[in-house]
Figure 1 (cartoon, rainbow, N blue to C red):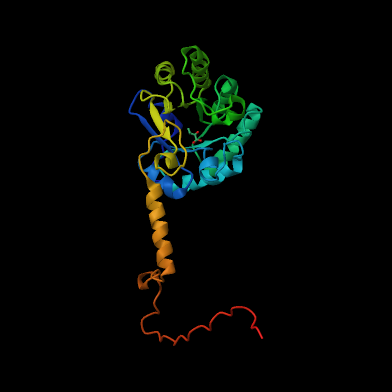
Figure 2: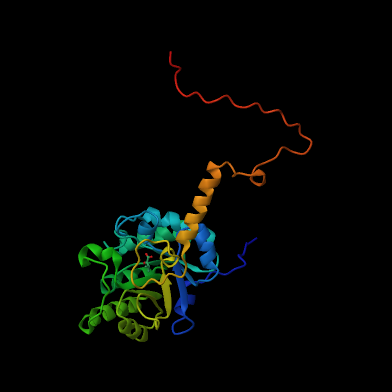
Length: 292
Ligand code: KIV
């Protein structure tokens, strides 16, 4: 007997077919609970390597490992049922060769059940993307600002703000599309360039600090919820969760200290009819060895 899921998950070809259509809604998630919320409203959930900064307090994404991505990818797959889940390939897991990239991607896909992976880089990744796509690995590209290159680019600066810098970024986006990626993230590039690349490439562009003309938009969930202490210019805070989490933690602390939590609603009474043994007060805790 075959067991069918009632909800069909979106696939990479579904996302590819949305070029020029209704904007694609994409957010990151790294946990089952947030994945459940995001899944109800998004087409794509990205398990981004930004988890290194958001979950682990790292300065960059460089130290993130394949094991970290697999663990959070699994959590997001468990929490979601409709959106396409894309897992980022971390620094060092795909750049050495197309064979290394395939082995890492296959490991992530087998372990998590995700529907696609994302890799950073344009022309330099063209052969790798083609190799993966031909072998059953749907690839989302990522060009413009590529945070895994922080040690060679020097800072998280927006790209293409002078027209003279456009050509290589356009060539990167075209290379990713020509190689067979199903979509491409455009990160932190000048707005007119985002618009122009979107008009040039046949695959959906997903903007993050690019242009409203992109085929979709993505943000890091914690950034847009107001939980991240430092965010780039392109982040709009759609919520302010920090103060309400702080308030809840403060109330918990007060109620624990004043012994008003847990109340009778949050503890287990004895079963009906069971006799309640008399509870004698516990002896005072020893305050250390008695002094003579
Ligand atoms: O890691 C990430 O969250 C990303 C997005 C910023 C696109 O790559």
